[in-house]
Image (tube, rainbow, N blue to C red):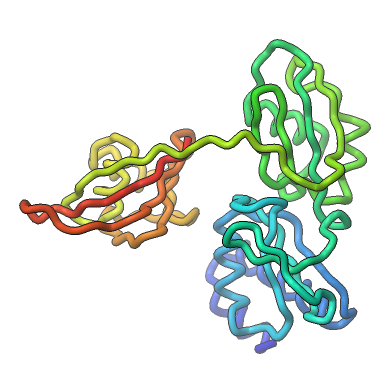
Length: 273
């Protein structure tokens, strides 16, 4: 590993510097004890920060995993190569073939009432038990249930202590196969043409709002690009970029097409609620 101090010197924010110092300590520990070492769950912004700091700077293998393909919140694993001999493939995701149950558990929470429960309800109930957010991964909502990825060290606590979500009684169980229960929801495809590949143009087309409204969201730091704050309306986008607005979901710039006769740019977006 390169000099830890040199890596940390490149990070401006004190909170981010402390976070990366913790990550580097985990990497050193895994190399020293020759065992898998993992972090708690991190959001996409922290994942991107960790990836930038680790790439090319450490000698031990690492990967992100959150319990299923496409997880937004994931744990960072450091693992010496000799611990696994092959990989498993989940769509485009390549994952070392190891037993994740000692690290990640999936808790299924069944709604026993007729009241509809939301992501906020489930998250609020879990945090109400005194659990820190970083101990919780994605919460995947179904019709009358949710599946939540948690660090293995808190799963038993949830099983014995979570009885209600809001005013609704629930039953709680541990997934035996370690798999998230999902009801697939298709993203809505949006085809549009924009004057430029600027964030204000594309966000406006994807969320159906004016460029002036986008400018307000940027100024108030409520709009994120690839889960990082951006303030410039002229920020240029590329295929695969993700724009998110709290409470309005997110859009992905899937494809940049040809120009129209009026020299506008055809684009294809996917919108997730």
